[in-house]
Length: 252
Image 1 (spheres, rainbow, N blue to C red):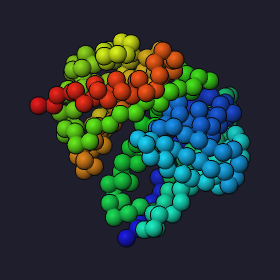
Image 2 (spheres, rainbow, N blue to C red):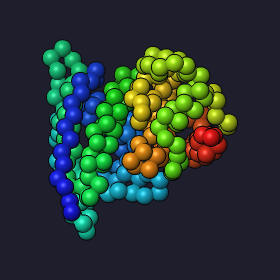
Image 3 (cartoon, rainbow, N blue to C red):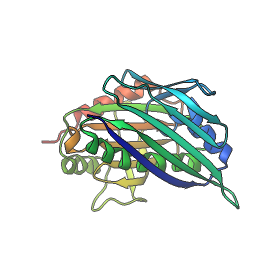
Image 4 (cartoon, rainbow, N blue to C red):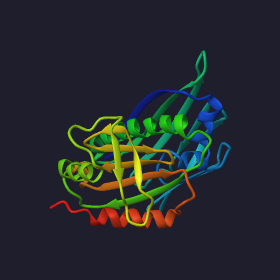
């Protein structure tokens, strides 16, 4: 049985409407703060594509008003489920812009769990968009993905991860964090998103790192979703190194 849903979010951004548009309506822009590799054909009826972990989710552009409004939706599945996305951009007096998001559609039987995950997930991604437009505006990132299914409970993950990052006590935005991953340059940055028990973010001079726990009711999957604003390491090399690091963490 399908269940209709709608998530509404709003965020003020320190960027011009045209800059916000480039970040949400171009493949390289979306790659720099959202998940996976993205494509978006710039016209109504154009094809969209989000590729993550070898799977591509296609969509169709349903509204294309540069600098103001973008909308697209996925095809309807055999069970009637689909998702639709609408972004509205409005300039602010004195500079900057307000971005409004409406994420709607129909979900399947586990709709309540998915709905809660989307609400908290969008908070994290929109905060990451704000970070991108503040610290990396105009730059293009290489997205890096790794995942570990059937991971530990959230409390155990964060206990191990915060130790790896050199953090003690309650984690807060502004804390300094450092990490060494074999085969990659050392990471030295600041906590820029403390959304435990689901999300932890680090920003450095040339990257945004996101560590994600799906939640116990979604299988305790651990996901890494990073954005590298440097050509020092290629995507395949970085993903291989991060996957090895993630698989090597001991949660015993």
